[in-house]
Image (cartoon, rainbow, N blue to C red; front, side, top):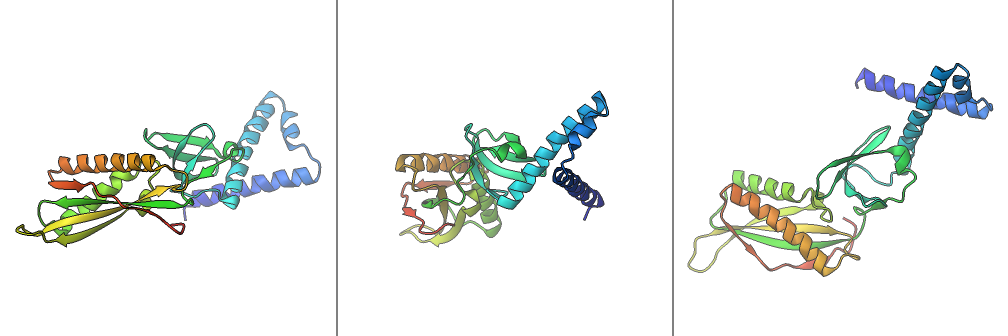
Amino acid sequence: VDCCQVSSANLVIIIILIVIFAQAHAVNIFGLFASLGVGGLAVAFAAQKTLEQLLGGIVLYIDRPFVVDDYIGLPDGTFGRVESIGLRSTKIRTSGKGTLTIIPNSALTQLNIENFTGAKKSILLSYLTFERLIPDEEKALIRQIILDSTVDIFGIDSRNTDVTFNEIHLPSNQPKSQAQINFFILGSGEVSMDLRRQLLDIANENIAQQLRDYGIGFSLEERTINVDSPITI
């Protein structure tokens, strides 16, 4: 363990204990800093803001309204995947734009947070039929392309995207490889069939473009099976 991380953690604990002790004994600790003058007032103000953010981080750690890689929505319209949860702030990778939004933990504790990852999901199946048999090393590349193509699409739980390869034999044709892709759409109970289709189209378009860039020939079958997952995945 990094000694700097340990020291920082100890410092945070000490500061919190000092504040708790001061409040228990009716000591205005921030007033004490202010009595030192303008410089002390600035220190007290900075310390108060820092403590609010640190305490917000502790509240998030205890309550756990979300964890890293969860998809969440905020009242201001921010939607995305949680990349990291620090002591002072949380980083969210917004869907679509892919920008990184950094929000103080003290602000998050005051908001209504909607966690989509724990919601019921709908399973959408898509099929890619390739023009030949795909060797194992190329299967690994295709699987990674599929996963990378869905990671920033809000509404698709990319952590559960599953890719299965099968060998198919068609009449009067050489054997070919086919990939079955299982997409998990978040919040299936509230998402219309039209919106599910739009999410699937976006995912398939991203995948198709990446495969073409690598010169991999394929056909995308239109058949899609919609199955509501009976359990939280």
